[in-house]
Image (cartoon, rainbow, N blue to C red; front, side, top):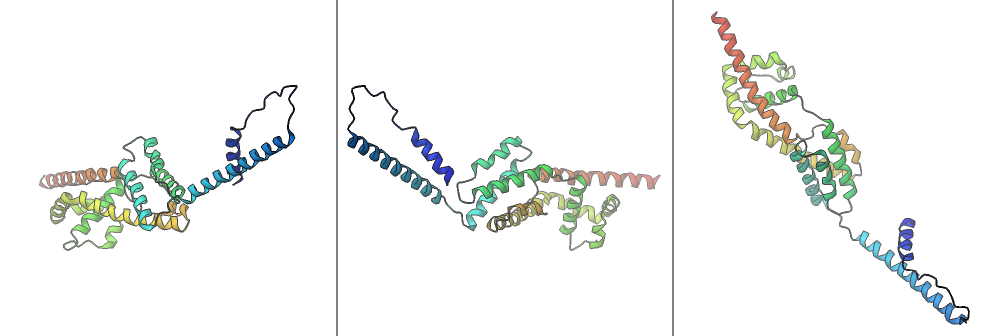
Length: 252
């Protein structure tokens, strides 16, 4: 508050009447001068008090978001990042912080956006990770007919993937799965975003903003999802090519 008082007084000092040269034959009336000084002093103090009160009213008048409003604000942040990161210039994406609405939680929201932004800049999804995700989704998609066990999924590697595509039944199901993969990936990501938003709102309410860095299953960027769609298509193509090569070798 001392800093605010100093700022107000500095602004007020700009309006002080400058001193003028007093004529030699000027005969001051002491009582009038003292009254004048007292009046200026009281007006200055009153002005200072009113400006300080106005500032306090402005601060106290800032909206405090309820839980649903917080979720809405956090969701907009996440959605903006998912959509634009790696498509827009980094500076432009980071500048979103300036658009966060005025509220008592604004500093916390800006801090969270900064942490999420920097984390996504450091994060990446490798091709191997995307292939594992695709295969898991494909197996889950054909769950009713799949004979693959959980322990087999855990040891997933290139040999395991090639073995899968040797199955005619799996190839047929994979083709059906591929037609719906994009929507399946978007639906799962939507679920991840909802859970992430809830976690971030709880972090704000509990004043544990830095816990954001410990969150593991954060949503995929739109760019990652698009990359995985292409990988899913390439996976089928390369596997079919290898199957044809193997059949030719057998005939020879």
